[in-house]
Amino acid sequence: MSRIGKQPIALPAGVSVTADNQMVSVSGPKGNLTQSSLPGIKIASQADQVLVTRDSDEPSTRAKHGLMRALINNMVLGVSQGYEKKLEISGVGYRVQQVGSELKFALGFSHEVTYKIPEGVNVTLEQNFITLSSPDKQQIGQVAAEIRSLKKPEPYKGKGIKFVDERIIRKSGKSGKEATA
Figure 1 (cartoon, rainbow, N blue to C red):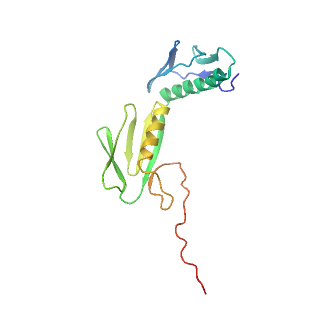
Figure 2: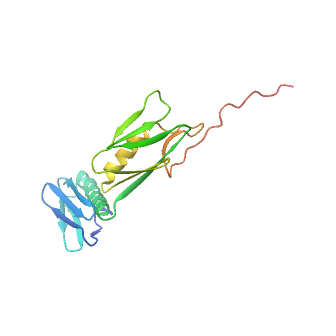
Figure 3: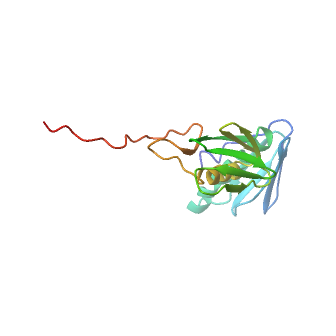
């Protein structure tokens, strides 16, 4: 049996899980999330925990077992606590402003770059920092990756958009002429 899949998922107060043959729905104080159920996987919701089991021992079903348990656990954590990602913009003249449901970036290009914020993601701007928050872990990771891809950090001066905890390996640049004497 899967090491991850056999562990029960503890439900915090205020979180409820409903599962049928096709869909799993998790609702809590931060919102509601749904996920399609994988074939061969059974989800049983009890009062304070959720158990994920599988029908057979085939390798494909065994692989889906741990995946489905991890997806449901991420949903439970998302609707109870929420997820947050922080991005940092560094570079002379690089800035961002929020206009309605769009972010407008000045990233050293000849034009402004606009990014439409998807529904379900909250954005907070503080000087050079962008804070994204959402109950959906997959969506917030995708949005953060798309924003980072607008101007990836370069290795010489470190200019660009990076995650706050990301470490950029810096290059030294030109080494200069060697003295020939």
